[in-house]
Amino acid sequence: MKIVHVQVIPKMSGVQQISLDIFDGLKDKNVQKFVICGENDNQNEIDQFIERFNACDVEVIIVPSMRRNIGMHDYVCFKELYKIFKKHKFDVVHTNSTKPGITARIAARFAGVRNIVHTVHGIAFHKEAGFGKRCFYYLVENFAALFGHQNITVNKYYTTFYPLVKSKVIYNGVDFSKFSPLPKTKRDKVHFAFFARLDEQKNPLEFIKAVKIVHDNATFGHHARFTLAGHGELYDECKALISKLQLDDVIAMPGWIKDKDTFLNDVDVLCQPSKWEAFGLVFVEAAYFSIPSIARAVEGVPEVILDGYSGKLYTGDENQLAQAILTFLEKPSLISEYGVNAKNYSCKMFDKERMVKEYSEVYKI
Image 1 (cartoon, helix red, strand yellow):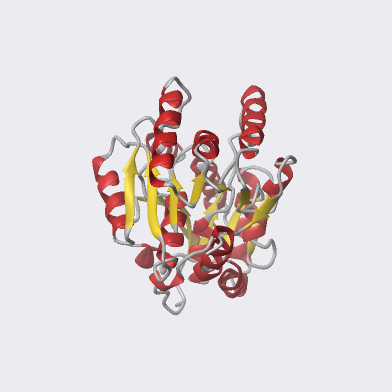
Image 2 (cartoon, rainbow, N blue to C red):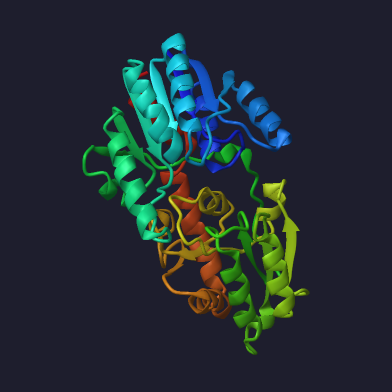
């Protein structure tokens, strides 16, 4: 059997990691594995991407015209994908995310591929998008869904947006064997951490504002320490806001985290105020370290974090985020209670083996 995953960017972020984990889980099967992707300006990211996939016996095919933005290159991309699909005669074409889900699914259907699978890892018509953009992508994605054979969503919430096709929910899975959690030790201060890209979606500025509210709390403010881990387009703005609010000695900014074990073993509570989030692999990774999470109750997050059981969810602004942080400071026993619940729930629902098994059934292996 020949299976190809189609991605936009050769970069090891969440969506690409899921493809890699699926392929890694199929290593004992009689399967030829490929991934098609576009280009990337960062050569180190390309090299890492190719190295990681090659290590799982996956052949990487670069299609330069595969890009995020819309333009005439999409017509070129369609023709190139069509030729590749006809040449390789793939048994399964598995598209991931919005752009491949449109261009590659249509090209695969015209090329006669018999099993076209698409996973909705996120929607371009989320509530934070403009009305015109939401309408455009909603119509285009539902049109493209007619060219696929199986529509997969990573949460139940998304299934309602695809009325023309039947959608199956397959939760993302994490390879827990990669991590080494240590027994929790008592600390002088509770460590709250943000751990994501510093961009509009992940909403780091709200975390900083919430930290200011907590820090100014005379009773509990000095019982906590804070980390803003990650990098991205809002890095300078985050740094400026931290200085403006006089939090330079309060919030650490270590940049990208390369050693997740060391970092997560030092965190007590994860704070992730994303404005939209299909799933959130970081919640599951943190849960394996018995770390509860605080997050906005958006999209698929309430299916990953159970409010009042494995973490705290909120629907407002930095004031509600600050109140959730203060709840853990006022009652520290909740951290260990919710942390144990988070680990048990995540290990049961979001493990890699379960995900690979469900996709194997979709692939008809």
